[in-house]
Length: 136
View 1: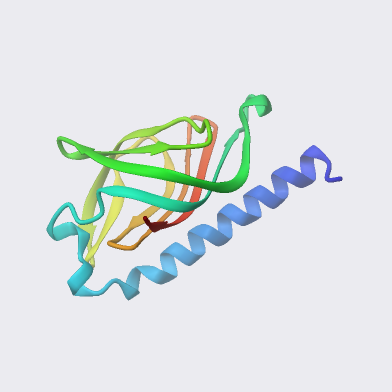
View 2: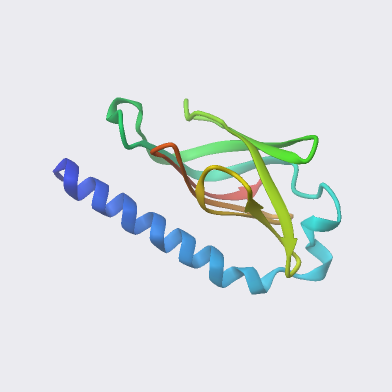
């Protein structure tokens, strides 16, 4: 059984790999699936999701199959997680190289989304959301 420190290390390493994968895959977004052109990526996604509260471990949710519903309110996007994971709301995006990239939010990390895939490796207020999902 892993100690708490080892668990945090593995989660941080996993988050780093998720972010690296998202950065590398930015160049693979085709023009046909350009989410910056419309609301193509609003909807439900299924896959592995997790949550880590760095201040209160009792709120952690281990990586498991779950759903995320993406909605748009005005010019910001909301991510409603299943599995009792807190929602991630009010994320701003800007178009860069045919990909929507999160900007202007109080968090750090990457949220990448296109017509078929949603990848999240995002930290805000000592809370970490991760996801590797496909469109349902």
